[in-house]
Amino acid sequence: MKAARLVDGELAIQDLPVPEPQLEEALIKITASGVCHSDLHLARGDWHGVPRTGSIGHEGIGIVEALGPGAERFVDVGDRVILGLGGAGGGYWCGACKYCLGGSPRHCAQSKPIMGTFAEYFTVWAPSLVVIPGNLSDREAPLACGGLTAYGAVKKLVKHGIVPGSPVAVIGAAGGLGHYAVQLAGAFGYDVVGVDIGAERLDFVKSLGAHMAVDAGDALEVVQQELGGVEASLVFSAKMAGFRLGFDLLAPRGLFVGVGLPATSEGNIEFNPFALFMKDATIIYSAVGTVQDMRELVRLAAEGRVNSHVSRTGPLSELGAIFDDLEASRYLGRAVLTDLSH
Ligand SMILES: [Zn+2]
Ligand SMILES: [Zn+2]
Image 1 (spheres, rainbow, N blue to C red):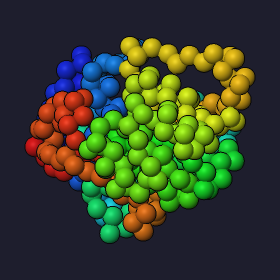
Image 2 (image 1 turned 120 degrees about the vertical axis):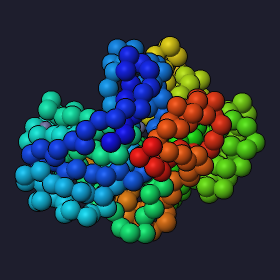
Image 3 (image 1 turned 180 degrees about the vertical axis):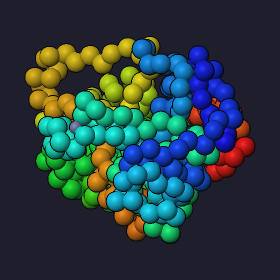
């Protein structure tokens, strides 16, 4: 089978044997795989200390082809499934530790990632699979990480007492994660202030149902004037300037939700304690989501309340070109590999 791997930081398409499903694993024939910004960060070595050799890709839709022992308790051969869970922690969790029982299995000491969906076949721990309905297209593969991560962040609004009807900023609103957050926060009843850069991207944000779409350069002035600040900022930006803007847009007692993972070279976000005192902000981070979040998100997508905006597709052999396009912001929303066999 064909599979994309990183070898010492270089992208390579290799011929590998089809893997055998082990205990509680399913063998999936991948029919579509989304290209996440994290894959680009891994390929470019943007995150200090992360290995430069290994399988990549962590957003997939496919068909269950074979089952290892015990996997029949979770899925059947022929099921159409979505897999990925944001890459982090979806490959295994123990189910019994304080993190698993507390709803964040990603922190389980035994957790394993899901990495390697840029391949014709992939074996995965079956309890992390979510069976999807027939009306959900293969182009929804990016729900597995981009969509799930945005959904997890929007759910934090509810958890932290931000009531529907409140103005909420989405920083990086036209991007691969932000475009989901605009739709989902709208579906939850929030007034979305979508922040991005350039007329084309702002038109796109408007088309997603945002209450307002403002350029990052004007956002502080416009938001202050029209709203006196937002109740929460969801920051999907890959730039530290976006993190700063998200904080600055907050009204007093606002909620800051960091989601993006800028390159290590972007440096750190700094908060002046006096600014914190004045604003009395709550600062949290939101990472990916659980298999239960994924089931909820699949239901919302099947009902048409959130959809992946896919404007770049191609076979596995075009992955390198897609990385270049993503790096140069040459397409809106998400890219999906629609043929993993060449
Ligand atoms: Zn991802
Ligand atoms: Zn555990």
